[in-house]
Image 1 (cartoon, one colour):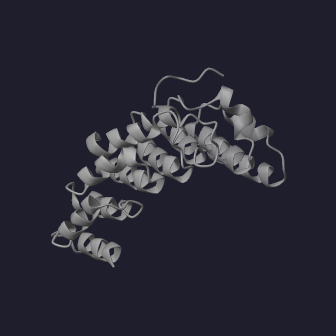
Image 2: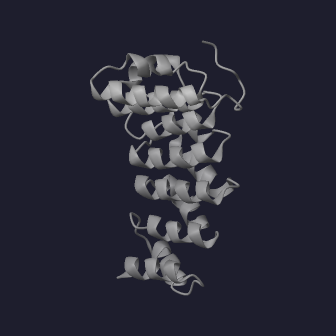
Length: 206
């Protein structure tokens, strides 16, 4: 079935029933419904199919048929979650997604899989510094901290001047790094107006 280019695809009651059947059949080791569900017009069915196939270690067999460019963000979100464990999923496409919820979970996945290939750190740095959604900036900073690559350090340091939630994450993300500049940044954070930022800095300086 050819999928629509629109995000406004039908969310059907039939789809709810099919999602249940996909999950139940997978529990019995049968994945044909999940495979077929990748082409269903209901994005929730496609999303469930992605998750089921990923959880059972067989999503990569169907990557050519899906999904990174699926027209619905709910499906791309499930793909981004799956990317944390399935390295054949192209993480850069997801990090550059137009939907913030997809970008946020893709940042988490990049950090989880320790991906330093194909300019991932550079893209994460751009998100950390420039993305309009603070949740995406926070997730990108967390991923940069998890990766611990020096290429991302400038963006983490810059994030220590962002809004409070991002500043907290930025301070925690400095943990893998050591230098007089890091110590200076942590000492400055001891005077931050947000108590959680101050606490995080204090913990790292101990």
